[in-house]
Length: 203
Image (tube, rainbow, N blue to C red; front, top):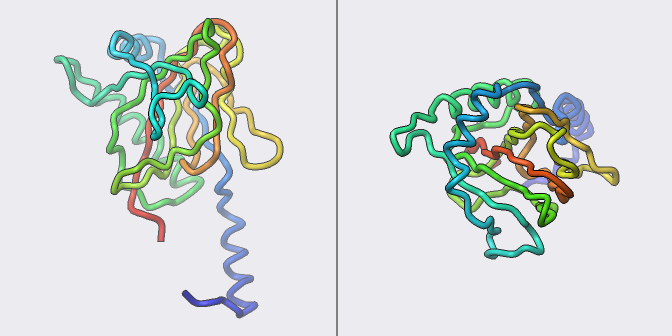
């Protein structure tokens, strides 16, 4: 590895970096319709299990239930939502990040946070553990915010966390290494989809 000691090179790199704010996020209101949301909830609601982290099940770090939605299962074609999410992520990537990506390798994670147990997910990053590297995280809200309290999605890029926009069908996209969390749901139930756009290791 070489040490860059040229002021001209430093200035050029700093100028280029100004155009890419890696802490920024992309969002799309009404990304999914109520009909599409109902379809996805029906596909996963009865298949949820207690969520775990890489270190195993731990209600101290994460208190929610999750299920998984694959492109095709049980005679149901879910490929349309994968295509729809991929198209949106491509726009976000081109507009904000310009990462080298492969696409979606993993199933969609359907997540349920219950207010009666103060469901939450502590601050974490979505680094993954496979040969492909998660580069963009996509979170889609499946519940009207009027139906629950708490459950804010926060990204933490400074001393003051950013509260992500809420809305039924809202999609939010940000780099997967950004520290983020879901605050406790204090009443009602919050449902969401989480998925990742992967690519080769950064170099």
